[in-house]
Length: 156
Length: 187
Image (cartoon, rainbow over all chains, first blue to last red; front, side, top):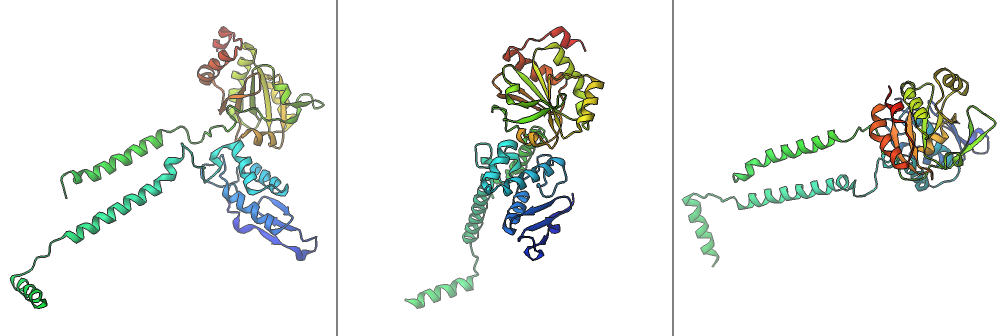
């Protein structure tokens, strides 16, 4: 897996052809209408998971299917589809698997609720520890007890 | 600390074991559940491999139960499942349709001539565009469609005698596909 991230080279408007942006990476040479369009493309292929390779995103995978899906995302971005439309396109075909951020549903509730559960457990532990600290009895020597009594008596 | 609290680490340990057990006994993580299951097969327009003049569309898959098999000559597993497909083609009246996925058409034609052609129709998907529509992420993949074009089963990987017995045969029976059992069991 060759990291593609740093290899996007921008040859922007100054090169003279109608402000077109050319992005070059190790494999794909793609042209975009604007730098913003190219940023969206890059963000989207970073966001989706490659269906073939359990833990790589589309931009980081050289699997043929990842190349195909990058091309699909590119085509959809060029067609003017919104990010959400592109997400829906991939989800309809490849399921929740391609989304690193799965939607909240009965099947995924467990995953989404774990952090909240851990936070609650942590809070409970913290609370219990603090209470224990407070209840610890302080042993005083006979002299100290006398002094405390004296001080308290003075107050009156 | 009460006596009961001393068991807390043990409980935690058992909890971790439980989560691990469930996690590792889950289905093969390489197998994606198909997003197409119980949904209509997508519309498409492609060329027939054996008759390049002919356009093929979803209408060609309707009317009777159809097995759509995504294959390629570069895929060794496709070779290993080929005999099973030939048997299914010969022993049942299901319609077998091949999708020649990201392949060289001339090589694919040779391949079918050499090993036999189980398909009534082979669709050319040279750039994998139909594959993306189908949620294909590797070959071979096989879809079972009812006569209305609804996807009722998907297999990622080879169609082998076990898949035939456990998955395809019961579904063929439900769909009313005629099966020559003797021919299927003669392996």
